[in-house]
Image 1 (tube, rainbow, N blue to C red):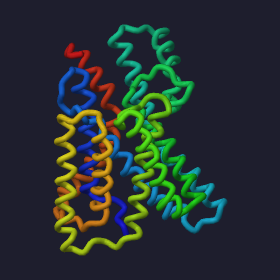
Image 2: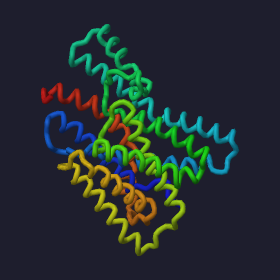
Image 3: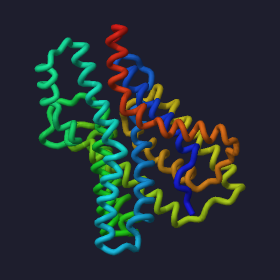
Image 4: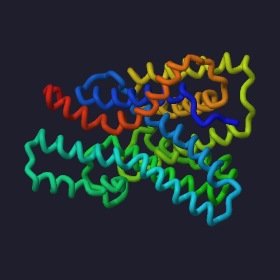
Amino acid sequence: MTKKRNDVLEFWRFIFCIMVLGFHFFSKIESELFHAGYLGVEFFFLVSGYFIGGFYTKQLAGKTFPNRLKAIGTYICSRLKRLYPLYLAALFLMLFIRSFINHYGFRDMLSLAKNCFAEFIMLQWTPIGNEVLISADWYVPAVFWGGIFFVILLSLTGKIGGFILAPAISFWIYRYYFILIGKIDIIVYYHCVLRGIAGLGLGIFIYFLCQAIKDFPSYLSRILFPVSNVILLGVFVYSQFGHRSKWDFFIIALYAICLFILMKAEIPIQNEKIKSAFGLLGKITYPVYIFQMPVIELFLALFHLA
């Protein structure tokens, strides 16, 4: 049986969160560091898609239509509970930071909130979207709405959706951006959700592939496990000097390969303190991601760096 989570995966989730944070911070001060850090988000999408596949196995597979409808509602509620409180808190924090920096009065704050209202209901990617408070938080509606799309798809198509439709949709979207602009870092309008759907679909396919293939024997795990970690470390190094290009899609392919290996290989780490530390890093990844932009904006304002 494929493992639900593993501590090494949690560690890499945190590392790629730091990669994204570095991209946002250093781009503000016009530094070349973490120039390709935006690629960390693609790792998040694949991991989220993998666990959507797990949701299918637990809540949708073999269930009656009424129970599948109920499971879809359960998924939506769980996602809102997981994502929305911190997302809203970050928006309100950014609103107050903007008012502090720009010396806004109460009426100015209301006007700013009105201009950004679509962001508060995770609809900034739709035609009703206007200004946004935290551009980096496009990830939240992308993973939320993209996840709903795939949960509904899997509830209707089952394993066909996981093995065929999900990767086909992902491939089509990746191909679209490969041909259209030759990069993946695009977040305006509906593109953020399409980018999310592409990554989630690939992650779902990796989950179904893991379910269909037996775990690696120990001797193969001892080879592939360190190789996958070296590859992910290489991506982190690449983020320091890479740039938006068709190499983005090669990095995504590496993510998919490494995710497959990490979820199938036997993890050699036995030290409970290390495993606990990695698990803790995984738990704080979303709060770190969601609050990065308000903290960065306040830091730059206080130290006059922007």
